[in-house]
Image 1 (cartoon, rainbow, N blue to C red):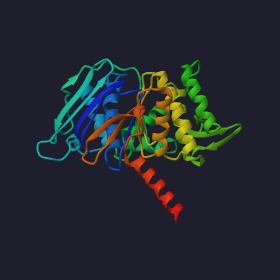
Image 2 (cartoon, rainbow, N blue to C red):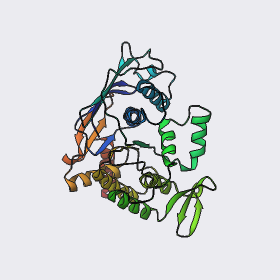
Image 3 (cartoon, rainbow, N blue to C red):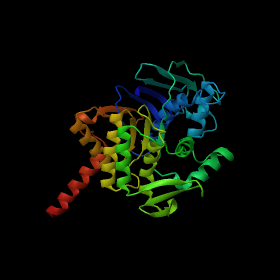
Image 4 (spheres, one colour):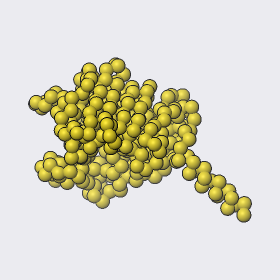
Length: 339
């Protein structure tokens, strides 16, 4: 798993670094502070290492990484990823738990070619995945046409990679025990199962003997189903890294709580999670999990100057705008009640 990273002048990220990362890691901060940007940066670097050398792909690693950054961030040239400012250079290092690293250093004039200053990462058989706030099942055909046929910007590489991963057929036979438990819990949450109808080439929602078009299915159900599908088709394995952008999107607070319990269950199987959120419920639930399990759960907090601070949920709820706003509203309620 990813043990540490350092990102400097990477878009809005002036200085984002973390050490001693855990199985579940949380990124919090106000809008436009770069939480999603940070997730995508880590995803691009680890996913490039996974894609390199697979199948008949003739590309060298430098090309795989450049393509992944280009299609993930959809910029005119790679130098556009460097924070504006005279002399600024983008510097990024990701270190895995075997102490092997990938390190980048390039400037604003870089076009479509980059050469890592260090890459001794071992090859990865596992697959990592990025789960965006919106579901992709109802848009899968549009996403693939736009990206693979039209080669047009719109849906970035995280969406395309996810749609392709979902197309893997469900694998029969015994799955990892914790994965089987997680699938059962996920399907119990939305009281059914979403499957691909190969004959009609579309996703359907099955509830008992009834079948519904995925387009007429609630957003929250489709979002939960995506993780269920990736576990069922074994795209994910105990060495996978899952990046989740705003898990609270389209989910009721009770569903958020159940979903995060499943995340914790999967983390015990070996999957590593990086999660961004604006939700008090997400922060509070993860805090309670960390407290109950007495396990480290690193938190990175975005600050206004583009720097990030690290703490640990095991040591208490972090000081941040999410918590502060909840307290402010509670205090306002007390004041109104006292009048």
